[in-house]
Length: 289
Image (cartoon, rainbow, N blue to C red; front, side, top):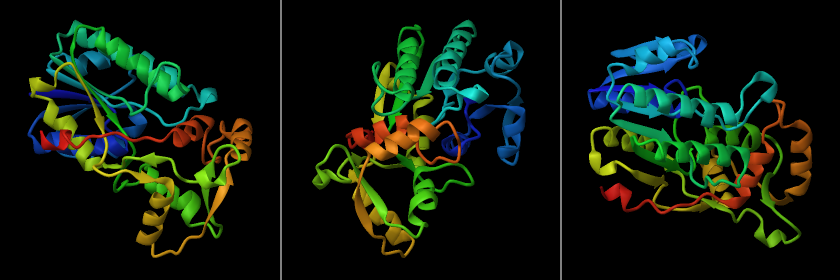
């Protein structure tokens, strides 16, 4: 079977590529010209290099494929560079869905995110709109909503390694964030971390399986960890005894308002909001399928 993968050059995408190869699918991987080098070393894939707005490139991707995986996304936007949630999470999703209908794609698999909602952050709401458009498209779909994804980054951005570099390797205490004035709530928000290889497996395993049609799955690990435990776990893996201190989030939010449009600032307003909301889900039954 021919599978078209949009978003195969990033952290998760590379793992999805390898999982698809392990299942012996014939893969068409879309890439911007400047990103092709990231996957050019992977053998036995067809790389289509071009602009996602170029219909000729999209035709090359889709005309002989049965399944489409859309994994394009960003965790922060830079509007001055034209890198926005609206464009990558909805506009381009809509474009590929429309083209998939034109080429009679049998199955469309979408990477979404746990916690998406209409009235959420820019990240959450645009992911939600992409889901909604797919569900109303008439295509057979499968939507995956992962919680925190971790794993070996291979020079890409990944949550745990980013936390290590921006917080744990610095000679200062690690912050236990909290809202308001009750510092007893510091660092108590929780996540359901899932390894990137598990995420890639679920994607590749759903390609030919029609029992996953018209389904939305929340992907998380079998255990939940609060922020304090996550910091402790990463610090232990680095053989560090890291001090942690309760840290009110309001000053961080103010700084983010001023500086999150710059790449040097480590966190955005959206990320702060979603971090404090927590990011947990129950996926134990999915691991049994």
